[in-house]
Length: 321
Image 1 (tube, one colour):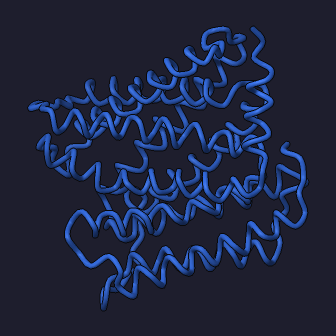
Image 2: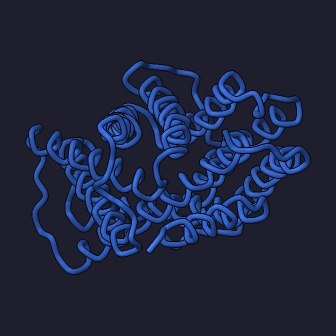
Image 3: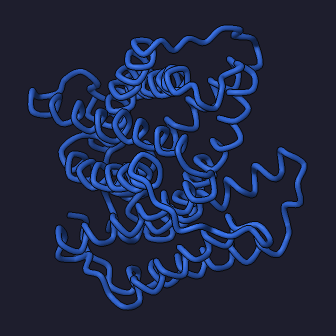
């Protein structure tokens, strides 16, 4: 039975501009929910904040399971999950090492040497990296005043949601802290653009499955090699790990499909929603006030920035490339 009709249907679905908003927002909501989920997992498994090796083990299991889940789903859908050319195996391996393994190591080492506020704000620089790289790589994704303004408004929204009351943001900068957070954002942006190119010749679900599985395995082995150990697995922690694997599988696969069919700038601007959703969901699960002015202003600014970028892209549609 031919796989062309389902592929054609998927192409039509993901190519529709109005679907970008809903799918990208869902992905960011899922990634935002990982903030309280990770904190909850550390608490359930008694993983100390400074125990990077154990954190890598936890992350390794999360992404390895996510990749395995996607491989099973792709196989059940009749997709050729192992029929990859040698060049494609090299591509998904490189993608997994960069987008999952390397990015995660930089991010967590950096987060251990800076505050959560600065980490969240600096991690949002990834959107700027994506937009700037797309400007030089894709002729149909040039940086314009409207796009630059949209990114700036969205970034300010991220800052607003992270600055609580009279809390200030000091200007200190260290390589192991703030520097590693920015490097992690750059690695993720570059890997995402590379993944867009790979997905033109490889099914996005299969590509995502292998990059998550390979990247997760490297994280797991690295964490175990560094002395990381997790004890006390129970029903609650296993259920939480299962949820995180599912959210990773769904969000990364959907995001890869969007990047395949749309401009990088049109999709990545939604990343500004991740820290906003993370703050809102963390506040909700921690019993804090969710609908306070800071959160509402931040959400409004991020949505405004997204509107500026996506309405420009929708006005001049161009083929994915």
